[in-house]
Image 1 (cartoon, rainbow, N blue to C red):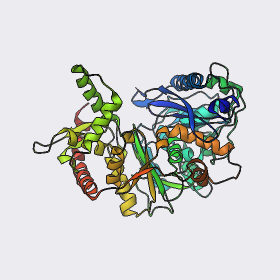
Image 2 (image 1 turned 135 degrees about the vertical axis):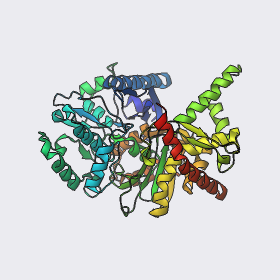
Image 3 (image 1 turned 30 degrees about the vertical axis):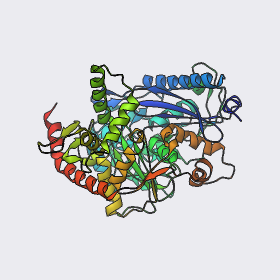
Image 4 (image 1 turned 90 degrees about the horizontal axis):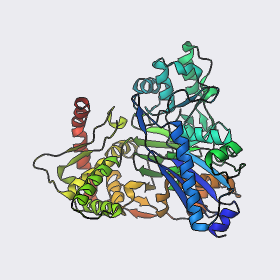
Length: 530
């Protein structure tokens, strides 16, 4: 079939992902290739000291993103989307969306970016003997209890952003196991919430006298390939305000952006991994066995089919680089020179390759917000140099590219050096890798490991959730998810790989030691600038 015939026959598959700064829709054909897309830009808001997106922004963003997809389909193929073979929704993981029995949100959505849950996360980590990060849903819930927030007694449903959207368009209160594992730990054997931890939490909060227990309010955990319901008539209207899209379309389990990133980079098999580097960054390494002990810097989640994954999550990545590039853009405009942002990024990123391997002593902290891995509750973007450092454009750009993945390196050194975790392949995706070969080389130096980048990885999580929707409906051989990706979607393609050079590795090691030594400067900036 041509793309037009695929769409008209209702055989196309739709994936939609809610990222931090963009909602993206990708339509794929029966060969899993993208044939149309749409997007909507959005920004989180700081309300009463907490980062949030309003429910109005969620639905307007979804509808605008889908409308842009419809426009793209009409422009390319002169046809309308009437039906689809399957749909999938994914979103940034974790956070806190609590609803009462009338399905009304009780407090504004608290996103993964909030770091106000320190007391709760510390107490739960000790109780469970398991690292419970600040951004996990269970941390937000327990912090609300510790803070005596009145709404907690009225909770009937607690879910993530992906779970919320899926629930409202299908009527099914469920989550994919990967997203569920970022609410409260999942047992890889049962592929659902860890029963012992659930019991401990219920005992912990029993004196509060709530009418609910934890499993009463959490979504049901589903595995990749499970049917998670169908688009309802109301759901179809919520998605497509033009009224063309028909109800009854099967919808796969909603997943988090970590899981869709693993799928989009063919990294769900044990001994594979991926690094997603955009507004935030995180690495995911699929483990052969559990780690020797809990680490505060490492989160344990699962793949969309329930395998154990060690995750290093960093709140910040490319935002500070983007701010500096915008400054260079402003300077270029001041000179009256036309600005092509792709060219500007390309030239600046490639200039970094000419810098010293240790950045000539220059240091950059990209902390737009707090960074739990390095113990910073808040952030101040910071550039530091001494009078004798080699201050030039190449070193300046290289320092910022190193700084964008510095926290990621600190976390992964625990896995790769201390725990001796074995990885056969690490794949990078996201804006950090957009300029060919540059971000790849920097990450290879940071992790002292070959890094692959695929052409398709630029499609990101929206493509990943579309692949999961396809796995649900187009897998007659009942292959495992790892085999389906390996054999059907990627067909052996592992992308273009760059191996680390000894000089780059040594330079990054020198940079990161200086980075750790300079962390008190960042802390001082946080403490002294309001």
